[in-house]
Amino acid sequence: MTGVDIAFAILAFLAAEPLSGYDLKKRFVESESLPWSGNNNQVYRALVDLHRAGLASVEVQNPHEGPSRKVYALTEAGRAALRARIREEPELPSYRLPVLVHLLAADLLPPAEVDAMLGAYGESLRLKRLALEELQRRARPPEGASDRRNLLWRRIAERPLALIAAEERWVRELRRELASLPGGEPA
Amino acid sequence: MTGVDIAFAILAFLAAEPLSGYDLKKRFVESESLPWSGNNNQVYRALVDLHRAGLASVEVQNPHEGPSRKVYALTEAGRAALRARIREEPELPSYRLPVLVHLLAADLLPPAEVDAMLGAYGESLRLKRLALEELQRRARPPEGASDRRNLLWRRIAERPLALIAAEERWVRELRRELASLPGGEPA
DNA sequence: CAGATCATGTAACTGGTTACATGATTCA
DNA sequence: TGAATCATGTAACCAGTTACATGATCTG
Image (tube, rainbow over all chains, first blue to last red; front, side):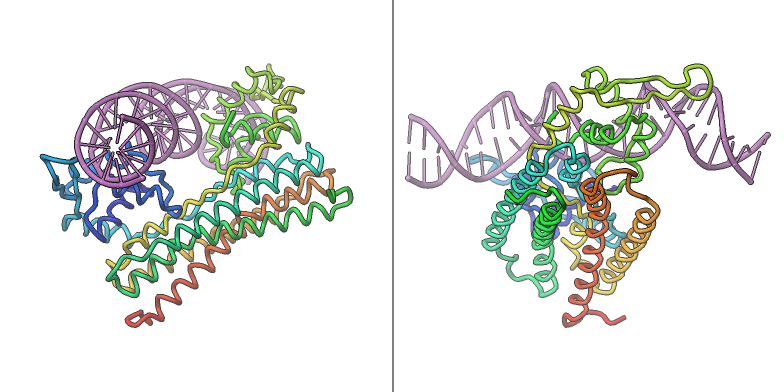
C-alpha cells in the first residue's frame, strides 16, 4: 500500500459514507482533482481487494429486484489503515504538461503557426475551466460536515481550477512575449 | 502516434542535435518539465521504433574501441512528422496531486497531525524547488540558438519551478486557514 | 584497484486505459 | 419502444517503472 493508489482514495471516500462501486466510479469521473478516470476495471477490482484485506465490509442491497448494489463500508481496520496513510507525508506533485513538448522544438514552425497552436490550447483551457466552474457551482459540500471538513473539500475542489487558471495566464503571457520578439507575428 | 508519447519528445530533442540513447535518457532524467523518467526500456525501444519508421537515422560510432554509441539524427520524414505534431493542439495538462487524497479524509486526524503532515510536505516541496533552481542555474541554453528558441527553452525550464512554488504557497495558505479554525492548533 | 560514468539492452511487473458484455429500471 | 441511467463485471492492451545484465573507460 505505497504510492498513490486508488484504494487509498476509495478508503477516503468511504470514510464519509458507505458507497457502491458505481457511486465511487462517479466520484472519480466527476472529480478533476483526483488522478483516476474511474474506469470499472480499477474500481471494482480495488473494492474486491479492500474487502479481502478486511478494510471494507460489503452489504448487498436489492438481491431480488432491481440491479443489485454492493454497498461497501469502512471497517475499523480500514479506518485505522486510512488514518495511518493520511499521516504519511504525501508524494510530491507531478505535472503532465504536453504543451511543453510542443514548445521544445517549436522554432521549426513559423511564429504564426505556433501562435495559432497556443491560441487553440488557451481556448481549450478556458472551456475546461468554465465546465469545471459550472461543475463546482452545482456541487454542494457534504451536508452536516464540520467547518474543517467543509474547508478541506472546498480547497480540494478548487485546486485544479486554480492550476488551470494559472496555465491560461501562462499561455497568454508566453504568446505576448513571442509576439514581441523581432519577427513575432501580429496577425 | 497520438497522445503524448516519448517518441514525440525524442523527435523534438533530435531536432536540435543528433543524440544517442544515453544522451536522451539523461535529458529526460534531468528535466522536471517532461513527464518521463527516462528509463532505458522506453528510450531505447522508442529509438528502434523511430528508426524502423524512417523518422530517424542511426550512425554507430567507435565500433571497435570504447563503448559503441548509436547516434540518432532526424531524417527529413522525421522533421516533417515533428512539425505536423507540433502544429496539433496540445493535450490539456493533468495534475497529479497526491496531497489532495490525504486531505480528502483528513478530519479523521487531530489538527496537529494534519498540520505536521502538511508541514513535512511543504518542506519537501521547498527542497525540491531548491534542487531545481540549482539545476536550472547551472544549465545554460543551447548555444547559438535564436532569441525565439532561447525564450522557449527558458519558459519550458521554469514552468515546473513556478508550479512547485505555487504549491508551496497553497500549502502555507491552507495551514494558516486550518489553524485559524476554532480548535485549530497553535503548536 | 575501486568506484563513477558511459553505454546498450532485456525481463517482469504495475497501473491505467478502452472496449466489451450483460441486464434491469426509469422516463420521455 | 427506445434512450438514458443504474449497476456489475471481464478482456486486451499500453505506457511506464524497477530491476537485471553486461561491459568498457575514466578518475582518484
